Image (cartoon, rainbow, N blue to C red; front, side, top):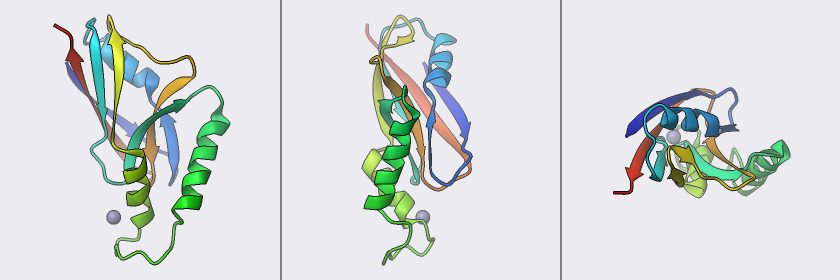
Length: 133
Ligand code: ZN
């Protein structure tokens, strides 16, 4: 099973909870058990799993990344978005989530987030179900 999601981000940096979209894409396509590979085919946006219950957590994450990787510094990349590339390298561009009978198996507080670092723009999230035999 494969699927592609499109996510329109609203801000320059943002973490968008895409858990429900992923669950809905899975539910329409598989009732299988295995692992869902969540992949973001971008160099200035990534994906991570973190707390989805308290929205302050993602604000703290973005604030901490801003502190670690300032928007402007002595970067060589001439496009002007070196910070976005570095933040993407830090969070990564893929995640793996267990799936039981077509349902994501996440911890109580976990959500799957698209991490936008050079928005707003339309991003893709590619899903591929790796099923148990
Ligand atoms: Zn660039």
